[in-house]
Image (tube, rainbow, N blue to C red; front, side, top):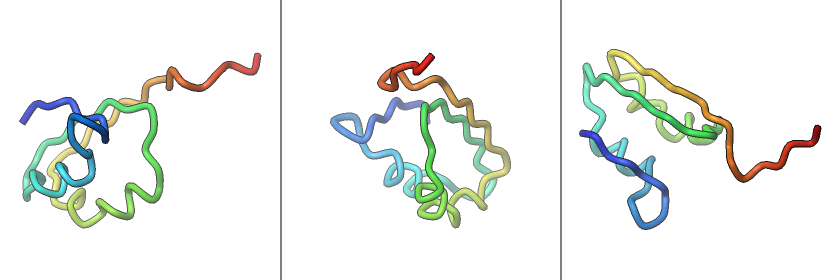
Length: 66
C-alpha cells in the first residue's frame, strides 16, 4: 500500500496502520512528528513488522528561534 495520510481528509494514520500492518510487513514512514503516545497506541501492530524505516523531516509549522 502506498498512500499519503494526513489525519484529516486523507485518512487517519493510526487507524490505517492498524488496518494494514500484518506479520512480516515492511514499513516506511516520512513524518515531522511521532509521539510516544502514538507509539504506545500502535505498539502491538509495529511489533508485527519485519522492518520499519522512519524518516523525520523538519516540521514546517515550527518557527526557528535562532
